[in-house]
Image: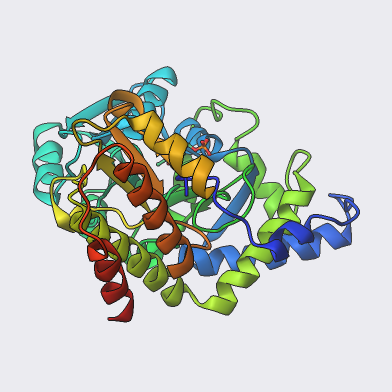
Length: 377
Ligand code: PLP
């Protein structure tokens, strides 16, 4: 129950136990095309979605090295560790991050984005971390923000690493130009691949770019040429492609909306149980609390690492420490991939036990009743 890598279904694991296909042969072309169909479904796009042999950070670097030019102004709401990383990476390629400082625990609003655009003339692109895995905040106003940026001719780039297929993101309908995720989160595949969608508007920018991409490995112009013949310029992690293909079949079988609903129900059930236990979620506003990563404040008198150690040792439930500035002050529960009532109930039982032995007063059955009633509703 960490915020990725998540549990991987057996069907997906077993798909990897196959001979390695020639990555320039027909078998791989078929696999690539199958994956392409599945990714369009997952990303809600008719455009291209490119699989990269790299963890999620690779996709972020790909977006930055292709869409940020020397001196170009990049608007970034900074409300957590991952947004900080984007700002740092933009600087490294010579871009100018225009940081919108948002207190940790809060989400950027469309109004704030509008103010920042009005105040800083010549913004070239807008990079948003949709689900801040370090704070448990989901930016649920992406649709409006993307609309605003598009009207201003600003490229919209979204890091959906920890919530694509766990929270609603309609890339084509909302006008998102570039979106990326990683295999090990809500898609419930093993770690090692990242996926990046590129729409027509973004391809136009690649075509018009005067300088070459800052990155050789992540050069989208080169990747596109190979993509057109169902290949990748370099050697792909073939077993992970088998796994991803199977994971995407599972997504199709379950249905996109059902998968979103399952994440929402599991997240909401767990929040209601944690409220009943007297724990406090880190995000300040209920509307922006993430359903895929739950970040909780460590209550006074509770030892964070002892809490997590007990859950693992006695119940086999692994959750994470807080991240960055919130390390030690919060703990994080991943609610992604193949989570269901079973995993959520087990997590609650483990957490209750871990709190009880540290003297936390618990009203017997109250949290479980809150959990059950959310699921039953
Ligand atoms: N961005 C977000 C929002 C993430 O949650 C993560 C990882 O958890 C990353 C970027 C980095 O991804 P990776 O660790 O796969 O490189």
